[in-house]
Length: 341
Ligand code: PHE
Image (cartoon, rainbow, N blue to C red; front, side, top):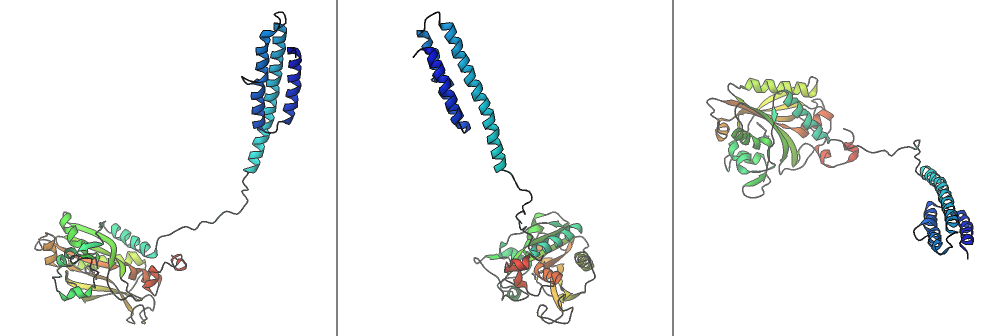
């Protein structure tokens, strides 16, 4: 076939092929087939070398014309296809902003944590700093240094989970007292929140696992009146209303004198119910003046320094605050209960 005929046949073939193109991929392939290095237009250019010299410029021009026609046609169709494909894609990805959204449930703090943070916040405002002690501790810090000699009957007040002969789950946050005395310069004014564990029968008002906040203030001339004033201020800030409290003398080996504070039961308002063991009152705190032996164990001279300590039960406070009648609710993980706080 002469080159001229070939040019025409390629032109015809191309317009047929172009008519069959659907996608941009088809078009890319078409482009390679005609304009690529091994494409039919390039082949034409190569075959030019066999033409007569006089014909070469004329044929060359025709081939270039064909090449430009093809390139233009491909370019135009490419623009059309691209914009159609983009439209399609946008259509598919369209978001209906009027559709209702998915409701996500937010988590929240456990009521006991809420109360714990609240008490700690109030105490920080009152000038206490925060330190933490270990949940697993030695007999020394949990008992011995706190003036519970071995075989002392007061140890029976706190049924203990022992891990080894000397290691135990702390029964009280008071285990931080001597640690803090050992580590810090005087005066000391700090609180220590945390978990405590006792091998007790679980009931509406006690659990084997609970939280306390320990508070300690040691300085020159700290008196029992400071302790009472601090506790009164704490209740005032915590409940934001007048609540009835009473202080009773009590015994803890690591304080002298020792007291316990009760809050009028918010469940029965003193009338007596299961929560307050029908006494009308709920004990929420143990406190007292730090025993000289405990100060000595912490390396402090009791002739020069005095201090008070208190230990607040957080679960009890939470029961009172929300009028909950059973401490076991806190550990049942029932969302219907927890979601109310
Ligand atoms: N640790 C005591 C208890 O758990 C409470 C307490 C703390 C009493 C500090 C006096 C001083 O019962």
